[in-house]
Image 1 (tube, one colour):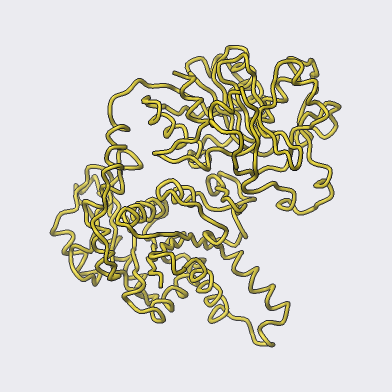
Image 2 (cartoon, rainbow, N blue to C red):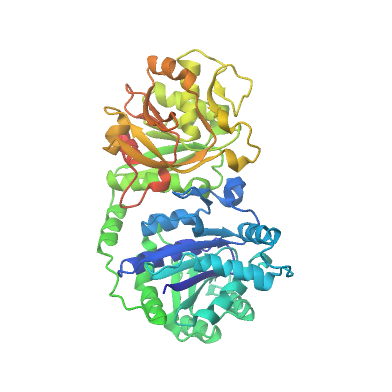
Length: 531
């Protein structure tokens, strides 16, 4: 039977619950345990697929086509696992399931209530990720304790503890311990108040993880105080989690605090000490002084770093493999439109144009792609970034000044990017999306084939518009090569310009399959070319 760790957060949002959960999972895996994860989000959207990145950061896509919370990306990168649709549930998803059952008459005429029907549905979703092959399931509940939206999720896990028993389910609560500059003091009261709010709801946390700013110390005396007022078994159940210099420092920091040891003790898990030798070796490589390379991400949501978190991390992973320090420069595409590509991008060694939707910033992205092509600057286009590369080529090499995507200009006569015929009459936005993993066959002798070192790959998609095959022959005749295709549906997956050092653009999202110790081949090739 799987054991469960429930991760909650209090005081403020953005405490790093997901990173804490992912780091704990890494430690447990390195003890020889099998671990899977789940994120429960209280918002009423069915999934984050239609939410603006300003609201919720990037949308992470799983192999089986689920649009999920960005924390799922952290889980995959830290744990080196492939998550599935059941890894992310929202209130909207829970209620949709309940309403569908009610309409089908499955409740036999009963009044549908939060307790027991909503809480039962939540419990079923949690138990659905458990199996005989999984030792530990880590479940993160989004939001902050005290939010009205999250009450049903907290009530559900409260019930689960009664049903499963204390030795099979553990509550880990993350809370802020702030430092007040004016008083020159670390204050534990917000964390105490957060725990009291949780206990008021019937949940007694077993472990308290205290988030502080870098350089702030939580003394043994403070740990004893927090343990006493928060009704913990002892000060060793209070874990200090300070801001880290590097994201991947955290598993080692939490191991030093003894978090995984306490978890194994509480859940009666027999496992040897986590062997973190390879992780430590990776951190030495990350921290050693290396040449710096600046790479621009030209996007439209650059005010929110989380909007491109997987792309940023994939670039850093590629830097580790190439023994360089990648400095990511977030560039607003609208600034490129206003000031010109050369004025904004003159100091970068590489350019990435990531995915996106809508017409805002499109001309700036096209200008960035042109600047990269004409100046032989390594370029990686991702999803919309591939479509941008094709549009730019059609305008400036083929001479079609009105070339565009049908998404941006439905009236263009040169719709080099268009929606597939069989998708045009589907009214529901999500229904027209190509989501999840699809196969791609690479052409030998191309930059893409050289990067992967194989002819067949599977990559994750999230888009609805495709390369228009009507223009394929003309585009290839003028110097842009199609180097990857989905043969089953005759879809172009990768294009490149062979004469450039590295000018590759793919319809899929390679960033979703990059790991710190195993960078994605296309990102690794990009940074290699930048060197």
